[in-house]
Length: 206
Image (cartoon, rainbow, N blue to C red; front, side, top):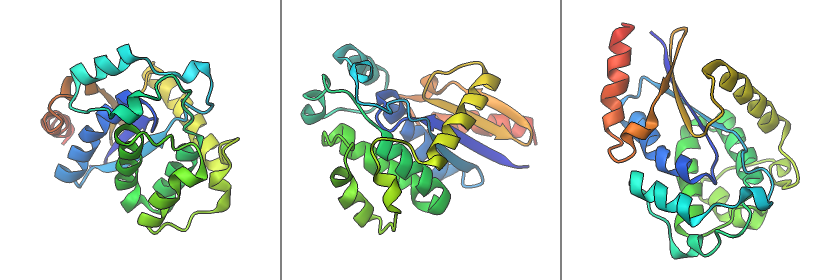
């Protein structure tokens, strides 16, 4: 039986940040489930439409286990731009899959816990160095997605058509040819609880 978990997210999305601990729990407790990290590049331009409100952050904090630093909160009025992170994470998921989830955690820590915008190459250099990644220069073109990142976004659009929602984040469990949309909201305050939910689905298809 083949089982995969698809995590559709944006590195700069607070709800995605709150959902990553669930993916971490699955990765640690269910090694037989292949993790697929799909960055949707929702915040692909730093404009007024990409501003996150204090009300949104308050809701995330109330319903999850994550926290947000004063440095991050002070920049809520700034537009978010996840283009470089989308390029980097799409590349890492393909070229260095064993490091990809740890890399995502590091990026989210930098953004939400340290207030790093992650929108310029200089914002990312120390993380790339820490993970000893030899990334191509095209990843740091902040004006556009790489062809690989753009292709993945279109794959996400196609998948969202199938599951009937464009909401992010999304956790999709694929078992053989079956695709199950997991209600991640049920587990945000207790990430390990998703393990039992996935085990139940796996047993149903065993």
